[in-house]
Image (tube, rainbow, N blue to C red):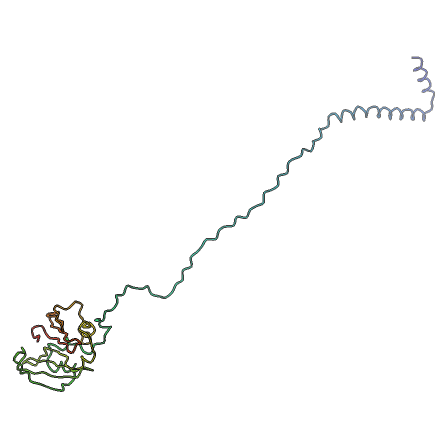
Length: 231
């Protein structure tokens, strides 16, 4: 206690400068003493340091390009080719397969002048005196028809009733089975087999109103007549 009193007495005896210096030193010491608890308090209340937690790095998967499969598009080529049709094969007896020399059907039943407008002028007229012929008493008229010599029998009224090939057919050397190639030359197209056959002849007794005969092997004559006047 005595020491404190002595210090106080000493301090009062000092000059202003010493008092200021002592005061400043005291303040400095006080600040130092106060900073220690403040630093301790600040360190205890500060946020905890976040530790670096290792995170497993996930390696990104390589992106696989999805290649889209190209769609196959069929190419349609347009052409001007017409669609094929089922065309039946032409037989030998069709009009387009064999050229006709004459259409006998257009002659039979016609008068002389109309028949000769198709056949041409007659080269020979022969009276028909064959008593076995149903046209007996009338006449035969002969004509040249291309490579063939033909004859037409007329009735009493001068109407053509029978047509017959007389010459040239044997030179073609047709067999009897080739009637489908012979008859179309005369405008006759038959789609059925003969009604009658013989060793050297085939017959259609009434094919659409006409008598038709192919005779010989090789064939030498063809007869086409209106059925009621058949030879």
